[in-house]
Image: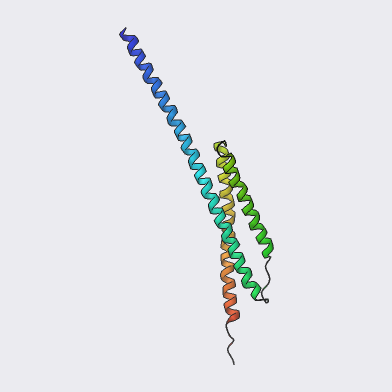
Length: 151
């Protein structure tokens, strides 16, 4: 009778260990999904902020350029359309997160985050270029406004 009791206790402990391992694995998977969703939403917020910063910078630059007809007119409408298209695409991404993220696989979540990371990486040099152009435009305007010394 003693060997059967020992065997039963060992089997019960093995079963309890298997259940604990399964619960731990499930918890880790759920934590990874939650982290992926959090990262995805954070990236979406960052891309949206970047696009709005670009839009604001372009509007400021256009306002300055429109005051000075000597400066070449930039294609503000094309730039605005590109930013609006980016914001619409971002809205579609957010709708996907809202509607499908609960059923999405981990791979789909990772791919969505990767797409947003790529967009953000592509926006970064454009934002730096816009900032440089804005500084150059400010300098040109200061130079243009500065009164000429009388000889």
